[in-house]
Image 1: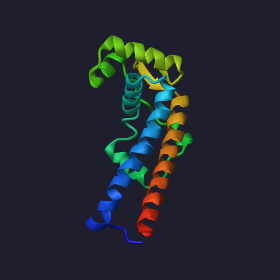
Image 2: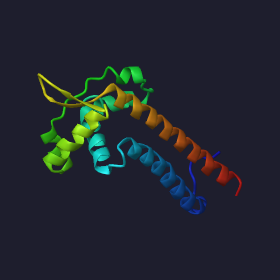
Image 3: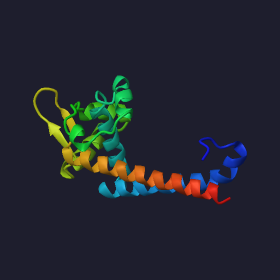
Length: 158
């Protein structure tokens, strides 16, 4: 099979591809929203916190190494997370500090986030959150593989 599609080949696939991508990401989004009791703002802050927690691990110098091999849950459990304060998260996310504080409390109650005391204080993902989203990402990749197979089948049967 060819690796690249011509514009003529792509035009009839584009609406199908758009629909299937939307369906794939919509499904993942609904799974994530259910975890947060359909509180989209809480979910958005959670994703932002996770990105900030793991910024050192996923720095540009490390990305090339990470792309060339798969990361296991065991490796993720040993990465050094950077604590993020409620004030920093509020400033970065451009949300009111009190809103961020309430949402962080909700995440703590869900056992997805823990408040680190002593040293550099702040909030960190728990192992439960790391494992949940590791498996969620794997499900999303499987959905995307199914999407690619569907598009290939469509192309082959035209």
